[in-house]
Amino acid sequence: MSDKLKAKNLKAAIQRLPDPKTYGADVVTVAVDKNSYTFEKNNKEWYFKF
Image (cartoon, rainbow, N blue to C red; front, side, top):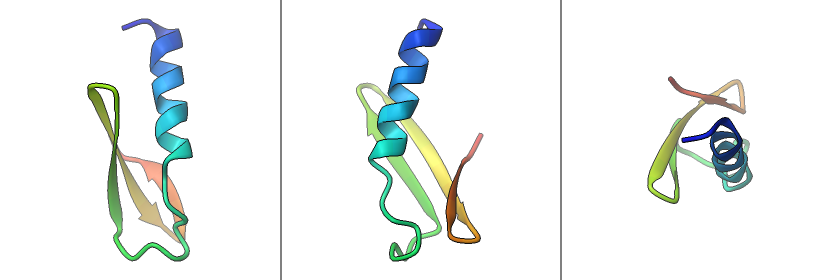
């Protein structure tokens, strides 16, 4: 997968994240095309989880 496509998919995943201040779960997995990206909430902000 090219770097440009990776960046585009990650951008799409970030845009789909719910509001961390009102969303109850601490971990969210967002699917984009055939890839999934997991984010973890820390201090009411989303962080990409490796």
